[in-house]
Length: 209
Image (cartoon, rainbow, N blue to C red; front, side):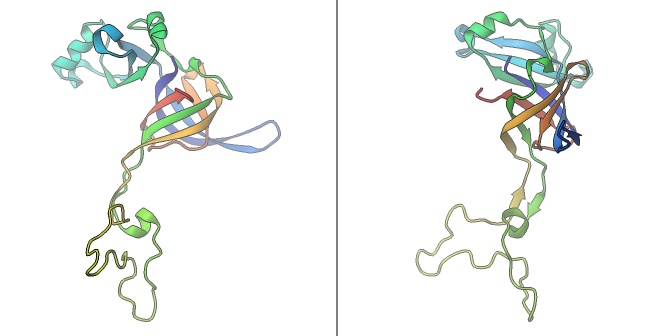
């Protein structure tokens, strides 16, 4: 397996041997369970479906519950698919556990999460616009200013920075370094920050996959 599901616990700092400080994100990575396999003959591609965060059977619908009962597995709150090669698929089985031990310190990973939602925001917060001046009777301090043209072309160009919904988007950060792996506690320490709030679900993949 080249990836795992996790949950962001927060940030802290650790000290290296030379005394420098490293900011790290602590992630509860796994344990995950292989719920289903997608084969080339049946589905047209090869991947495995991982389940994370076990939940009560009453919390899921009957069709979803049947998906797990068919494989004698408990229901999971989070399901994600990870692409694998046909050779790798043959070595994996449904019900197999995937833990954080698939990673090694010093490896590069990419982390995908959903960024914090900021609601409806103006152009200064959303796009970093300067805004109008705050003195001499100016009445439009945080407005975007002129947004279009007059007679020609008499329209607003696509892609112009405007007020709107900010955040709550799928974000992937690449090139993050694994600082420490704690298999006994299912913890992964990654240098720097990752997308999303605390307890947000993350997908951690090895770089290049």
